[in-house]
Image (cartoon, rainbow, N blue to C red; front, top):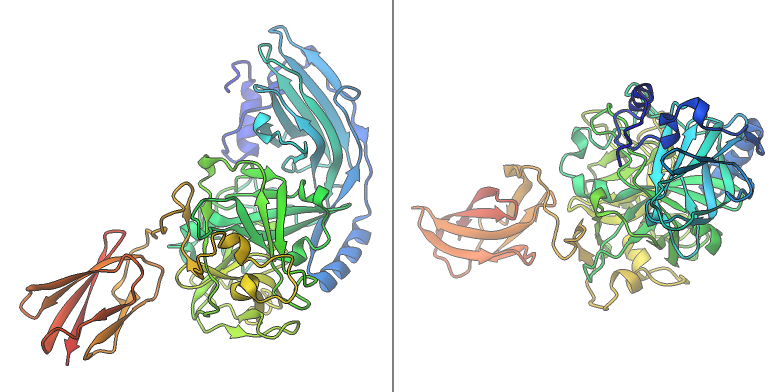
Amino acid sequence: MNKLYFLATALVALTLGMNGQEINLPPSWGVHSSLITVPDAVELETFDHDELYATDLLVEEETGKTINGRLAFQEIDMDTHGVWNELADGSKIWLFKYKTSGALATNVYFSNYNLPVGGELYIWSADKSYAEGPYDWKENNDHGKMGTAEVFSDEAVLEYYQPADVVGEAQLTTHGFGHYYRYVYDFTADWNRGGSDPCEVDVNCPEGAGWEGPRDGVVRLRIVDGGNIGLCSGSMVNTTARDCRQYMLTALHCADGVSTSDFGLLQVRFNYERANCGTGGGSSTHQRTGVIFLADSNDGGGNSGSDFLLVEIEDEISASWDPFYSGWDASGTGSNEGVSIHHPAGDLKKISTYDSNLSSEWWGAPGSHWGVNWVETETNHGVTEGGSSGSPIFNKDKQIIGTLTGGSSFCNSPNAPDFYGKMSYHWDGNSNPTDDLSVFLDPDNTGEEEIFGNYSPDCDQAWVSLAEVEFSDVGVYPNPASDLVQIELKKSFELDFVTIYDALGHLVVRKDLSKGQKQISMGGLTEGIYFLTFNFANGQQVTKKVTKL
């Protein structure tokens, strides 16, 4: 909603601060300082960053959890704290200012969040260099939990705005305030590379071409575990029912031991990526708070199994965010090329590439993990880092075949291996899971072990990459052939049909390939040379010459 009384100077400041993102300004910014009261800051708990780092480094080494912040527990109720301002037009603004000294960034978690339709909540840095919001009634839920995005300051203001014609009153009670001490970077300037190491590759560099769907399924996680706040990655996943259920797959070690109550504070951030390769700020407003636990490997986070966790995002994901639900292959078939897409160090989305066969290994449960070695690509040599845990590894058909448990790849050792719990092990291979992954991803017990993903609401169809099909992407063998010809697709393009022509260009037969068939019978054809024109669902064609014996 546009507010005509916004100050031009404030508009300029926010445009600069938010790197062009389209958000509403906090309404108080448009009110003359003489007409509004901002309270003094309430001093909250602060933390010794050196002590936090030493403690969290040990935790990361022992458990794989990447912790970058703490909760300063403080119950603040808008009925007893802050200041209400009534404006001439009958609208009201509630302001609460706080400080957690030394924090690189801060945010707010609520234990009771309920806004009437038309009300708006904002959080902004005290120097007005950064703002997030508005949050509104669409964040309401039965358990009342909600979390804001972070602002880059140790001093911030909560602002609730209620227009005069709004019916009802807001209810806001805080659970605690986030204090972040590492892996925090202000992405409001193009020049700011981000928090991950310098060899990482932005997902919208050339290496990401053709991976747009899987890219949009990968999410950044901010996980509350008691007083700790940590980072991981995950991916939305499709089911055999093709019903766009809001299922998100990650690694158990990311949230091992997290309480049901704290799952209500887990934040899932969508589309957190640069618009271009190395340039452009990342959206931080596409976020949902609160998930429902469904199943995990119950293996201590990979100690004796494949290290998976499946949850359901509780609140409805906005269709305008274009959520993608990735496909998967749980057959146990490996891959000789593909990528992982992830959020290293909580940074904007990155992509790492492999082009050789995955190994099958893991110290905890032999055969439960894929081992992968990343390769140098056009832009750089992508690896993984803390915060990448739980991210998916994809095969060449753009299906998830595993989720990251850990490894030893770093920018200073880019060829060291990483290890991904296998989808086939998640599926039904763990010895004592709370439930097998198959129970939820194959709800009707169809027996399917691989499916393709798509955007909501078209989850009942296979997503088609817009990347161009090249001649080398299609293989046929044996050639010459006496009967069956096998089709090999080197990328995840969807075949529609094949037309077979003889050496004179006469149409011989047309065969449907839309059901995923990977072989063609030529047994009924006479000996000679034939041309097989493969037609893809995206309208492209590739023709191969085959000799019939």
